Length: 459
Image (cartoon, rainbow, N blue to C red; front, side):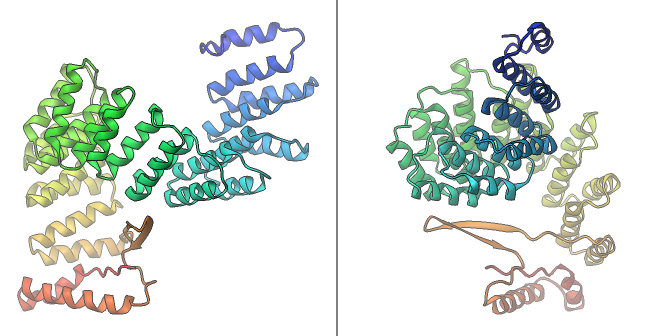
């Protein structure tokens, strides 16, 4: 009882007073420390438990491993894993699942995969942990592949499966795959599950399928703050800011109190639509009407909003007026991009100097500054910036994009030469670049434009 109420010290006192501690008492105290992610105390109790002759159960092991996973304590987790191997303990699916989760959360993907492969007959719990693990580490395509393997293995997915796999579809914008999963979800009778329907709403929203998202939204058993925020965000992300604001107004009329995330979605909607005055008013309402202290994300939205509207000096004053964020690299970088967009080179140079002073190895600052000079046809300045980047051994990372074709995700990279026709594509792009240069500038400056050439080869 004390443990579930967060009264750890009281739980400790009660535990000490137990003269002959049963395995249930040991497991309960370990679970108390596990609830606050204190793997060190869990291990200490586990060792005392062994010394006093009480044999740990699968519940003991899974509680400790969960604490290790949540606190990313690899050393403590491997200690328990080693104990299991040395003592040849026949563990259940929950212990295997927590082991897989532990290794994913500690960045040891290969070890997580090895654990899964060694399970004689993995149940849905272990499959779910594996899928969720891949989603957590950003291996979204791998998560989809594992889901397909699970279906082939004739295992019935549950709510946890769909929540994870729909998240992978969201991140990849894999709409057709998401629709296929939606059909499967309905077949297994999860059409009224709030968690799964919320994940489905998020998937359609992020894939740009607004009509489908709205249909899911109105079919939800209960529309909570999360679902309202997801739908507002969906409208905002895909250029329907007025619909987003209308929905926000409806939410307020129903006396559903918005939180920081809701206002972030509203501000983002205003930013994408260029509604500077409306966005500024919502920012003010958030602070004065709801007492919500703006975070760096809210300020970033506001600066982006004002920057897109060309109100650069106003945005700069707001940054300088916030003691906590006035030197924030992300805010200044957002405003620098706006200066480039609106050709305010004076303020742009000032901000770039602040950024370089703050972090002289920030690649994006040099790239934006170089592009700003290029748009002003200041090729000498472009060359100076590029030379500085070369001296600092800075190199632009290759971009990656993907597209869904026939329910398969195809990825491609800039400067990727794996395509057999890469040479021909490269020559074609160079020819186009050359024509662009000839049309854009006097002949005496053509050689300087070579500094800007970046060849992109699609796979």
